Length: 225
Ligand code: NI
Image 1 (spheres, protein in one colour):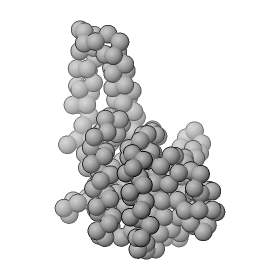
Image 2 (cartoon, protein in one colour):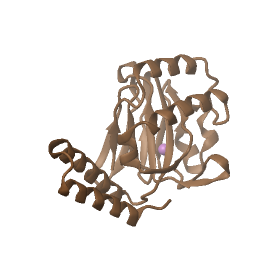
Image 3 (spheres, helix red, strand yellow):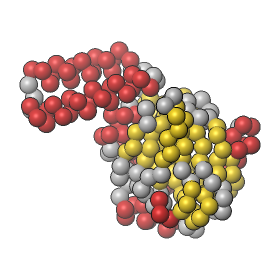
């Protein structure tokens, strides 16, 4: 399942982050990938340990904690603190798959069920730079407004097209979901959205309460916590 989550950050938040990232000390993005990724990755990142990445990452984490669509779609158990990357001057990231397990906070590790990219530059500021995700239905090119985020299966092969003009700045991170199976997670999201629409139309009645209990019983059956 791929899902566009609009307005994770406000325009003011994006502007403030961009101003601070304009003075950042970017390093070669190949520092954080394995052999296959290093062969195809040409971009710059902020070191995960730098204070700026940690402060801005915490701001994004706080914004996501208040975002009901993110919670309903990802059903997050834990997430890697957001990292930041920049592409300019033809930089790109060729076809690759994200590593299955990553180090998380507090010495823990997490299974990467979902990948997330949060755009911090407007599409008109750069040419190229589409995130292209492959699935059984073909390739999906993603280029979103600043402040918007795409969630996609970490198991997918994906790439970032060369940025031929301007600069593309994004935050990115990985999530271990309480529900590891993508199809089950997609069903729960659809059920959740249907219940929300029915409650808006009908209010709370016997049937909406029954559907809500079925949602929670499915989640109880599938969730790992
Ligand atoms: Ni990737």
